[in-house]
Image 1 (cartoon, rainbow, N blue to C red):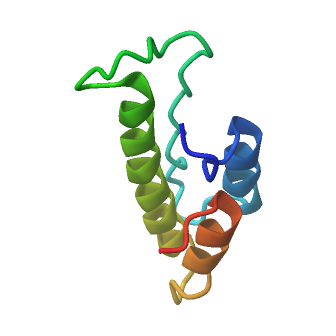
Image 2 (cartoon, helix red, strand yellow):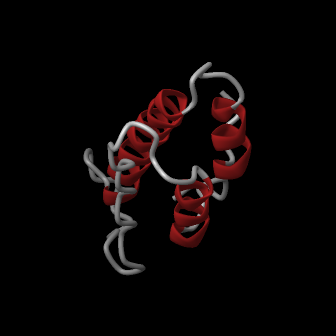
Amino acid sequence: MSELSPSPEEIKAVTASAGAPATGEAPPEPPQPPEPGDCCHSGCEFCVDDMYQSELDRYRLALREWQERQTPSGAGSAASVSSATGNAG
């Protein structure tokens, strides 16, 4: 797993900081990180750590899009998600 990955607590904090949903739409749920012993470190083609990173990328995008829908202008929220989750882009 990448050292840049946010912890589940950081993900929850970002989601909570979005405030009450203006659209009545629930925020996306963050993916569950793999347990410490889930990766066998044998170079599997579909490593649980790699799959988690892909799920985390999809979650970050979904959260950014959700936050943009919560503000009338859609401005300003994407940067807060990126910085809070350690994603620069």
